[in-house]
Image (cartoon, rainbow, N blue to C red; front, side, top):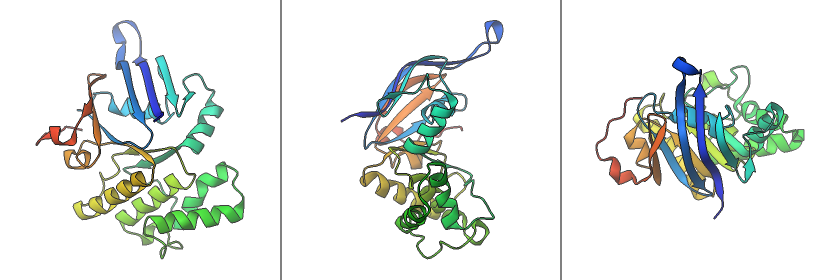
Length: 238
């Protein structure tokens, strides 16, 4: 099975000399197609920096990053924007929906940037919203939706371009426990359908529902094969 994510000796360094900070230090890891992983670690561990590099939102200072077989570390900003749009779906703690647009129009947005024809945009957006259980709320604006429903719209928007990777950053952080379970069930269903899912979380109860945990500390990967049951009753400080 091919790797969707491959880090080879990645370092991310800010500043120089006495002010040098190594956010990541010689990190190597891989996530295979179809996996469902979580990234964890205490505050300042490097997990957010790793997520930004995985999502092509930042570049490593040193090392090689392959996304779905493409070395993206040396791509131009325009090329990075294109590969983000085509290869990665993002889900954030804050939903980042445009309030003046309906759910359907919000989900259609990534396809505008991908130059998908208008008729196909609407059809695919409706299909994605139906997949996350919002087939009857397509014409509602975000203010007419609950927090859980807004996150479902955000997930539909993330998958509408059929990405190879769904990257989620604390996607349940703003949700209550019942809605959290509903959203995590959607992630599990999407993974079962073949989408690779990587989730950054500080919540052990969320990480336990993934297949594998990648544990960061002080800019290094301390364990990239941690089983959910190994978390025990661990409490993580975000």
